[in-house]
Structure formats: C-alpha cells, structure tokens
Length: 313
Image 1: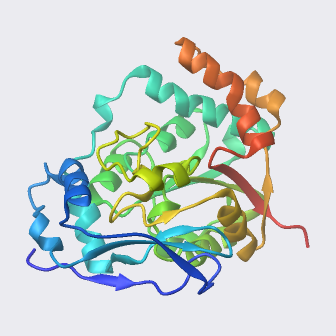
Image 2: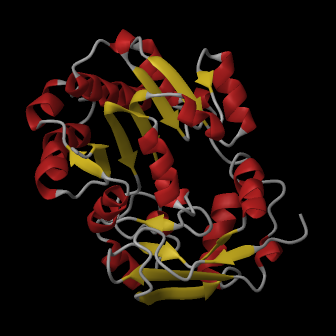
C-alpha cells in the first residue's frame, strides 16, 4: 500500500448542520497522534506511519446536535485496508478472552430477552458488525435464530464455521428481525443515517434495535488534556475519538437526533428487569457497576447504550 486517501466531511453526518466548531487539529505524523497510531497498529505487517504523511486528524463539533466527528475520514478503499489488514492483524482471537468477558454477553442477552417477552426460539436476531460473533454465538446458545453481518472475511468464515447464518449488507432488506444488535459500530460509520435507515426497514413492527457506542462521558475534560498515552478506559482516554476508526463520537443529544432522523423512539429496559437478570458479581468493582449501571442508563442517561423501536404512527 503506497498511498492512502481521505474524504472530507463538511457537514454533520447526523443532522446535516454546517454549524461546526473546530475542537482539535494535528497531522497524523505529529508526536501525540503518531504515538497513538503506533500503539494501535504498530504490530500490523502492512502498517507504515509514512502512509499518513501530510494527512490531517481534525475533530469538529456540531453546534446543533453536539456530535464530535472527524473531518477527514478514510476513503472506502483505505477503509477496506484499515479494517482488512491493520485492524485484523492486531485484534484478539476469541480464544484469548476469559469466562468473565463472555458472561457480560450472557447478561446483556438475558435482559433483552426478558424485555422482549418472547420465547428465544421465536426470535430472529441480527448482529450487525458482529466481529468474531461473540454476541451472536451467545444469542444462538439461548435458542434464537441468529444472523450476522461483518466486513471481515475472516470473521464471516469463523461465524459460518460456528453455525451463525451470515448475510451480506445488500441482503438485509430481505429479512425482518425482532432484534438488531449493533455494538461498537456506529462510531465507525461515515454515513450513520443511511445505515440506520436500512436497519430500521428490516425491523419487525414491534422490533427493537440496540446501539452501543464508546462512552462520551467526560469528553470535554479529555479533549482539554489530549493525552494520547492515556490507556483505554482511563479518565483521560481518547478512545472515543480514536484516529481513523472512531470517526463519530456521540453524546446523548446526537444519538437521539440520529434515531429521530429515521423515526425511531427510545425505549428502556425497566430497572427492576436489569437487576433481576444481572448475573456477574465476580469482583467488588463489578458489583458496584451492577448497582449503579441501571440508574446511569435509565435515569441519568450517562451510558451510551440505547434501545430504539419504530415510532408509533
């Protein structure tokens, strides 16, 4: 790969507003961003920081919906290289995760099934952007009819080998799903409105879609420090605006605006149901998180975990 190309976004990809404010700007090869990229992709065989020479990492904020987004994003061809080689060369394989990691998926699906109030065997679900299919495989274990979509051929082949029905993006309109899971997907999308529109059309009348994205809580503080060495999950972590990949950083206002664009309404799993089907209590930290999370989600709106259904006509 000798050259990479970028496309410029001149308006908000969620609400189309042109009322934009510059938040941060740097060359990809400058010290801070360069250090982050080397940590993220340095192990990928095809990665060379010089591919990004003279390219700019620029963050803009929409003054209408609060979305923070990268002004310059990889072209479709570069995007394919990024996720097909740079990212896939560094991602963990399913065999590297511990039991506690998988138990989180089990808990998530238990709460969703309890909310939907349908037998798992009667549910057709789609895992959009399934990766290695961890969520999809857990849903299949509960008895759901599971379908998966992903850009990575490696992930698709792995899913097929483990009994997941894999389909392509253009096949989605041919199906009607009771539930669509999108976990850590919408922060990567150049055109989130058009993607969500397509997914909404494939929902059953009473179907639900989940959108889970990196948590933007405290981003104003993080952007004020711009500590590129801060580890993921830390107070100063810049993971929600990670160069090249996390091209959209959603606040609650911007996420609700996105749903409104395609006539979706927010729904919430009752707090009592969340507590009833909370199964992972393996550490004091996890126990505390279990206690406060339903309050964060339902009352404070501080977690970027959303459920939407078709708006009533």
